[in-house]
Length: 247
Image (cartoon, rainbow, N blue to C red; front, side, top):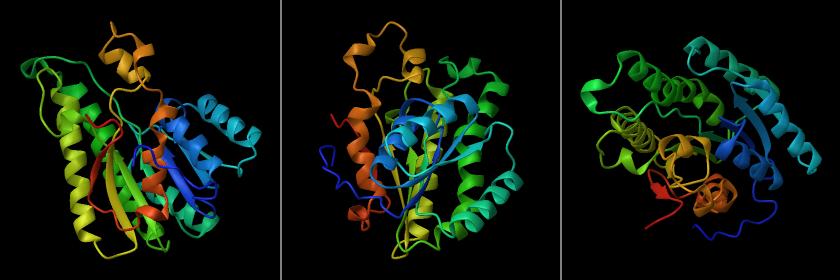
C-alpha cells in the first residue's frame, strides 16, 4: 500500500486527531489528511508550530482545524478526559487518531540509561498513548469506522544495541496496539501500527548526525500508507504493523 493512490475525498466527513502535529511526519500527515477532506485536530507542545500547520491547511483550502496545545510529558489522564469531552461536544465523534508524537532519548548502553530519561521516554511514548487512547475510546466508538494508528519502529520488533529506551517503548507500543486490536476485532474501531522507516526528520538527524538527509525519503513520500490506514478502504485491516519503506 506504499503506492496507494488515495481518492481526493478519501477522508471527507472524518475528524482526525494527530499528535506531534507541529512538525515532521505529524505536520505532513495533518496537511495531507486535510487535503483529502478531513477536519484535523492538531495536538502538540509548541503553539507557534501548530499555528503554522493551521495556516498551511487554511491556505490550501482545507477545513479549519482545531489546535490543542498539550505537553505529553506532563499531561495526566484528567487532561485527556477533558480533551475527549471537548471533542465529543464539538464534533460528536472521532474517526481517527494518529499517535505520532515520540521522543528518542539518547543512544547508550543499557547499563548507562539514566532513570529520569527512561521515565520521560516511557511517559511520552507509552503512557501518554495509553491515557489518551483510553479517554478517546468512547468518542471513537461513535464513529461508524474509526482508525487508530500508532507509530512504531524496526527496533520495536527486534531489539538493537544502544537503542534500549526507545526500543522498549516501541515494543510496548506494538503490544498495546495488538491488545486493542484483539479486543476490538469485528467492531467499528481498528488499531494498527506504522513504521515510517528512515525519514528526513529531526529525530532521525539526532540519531544519525553524520547521515546525509538528502538520501532519505521525506515525510511527504511516505504519506500513501498513512492515507490508506485512515481511509475506509482499510476497514478490514486490524492488528497489523506495516512498513512505509519495506526492505
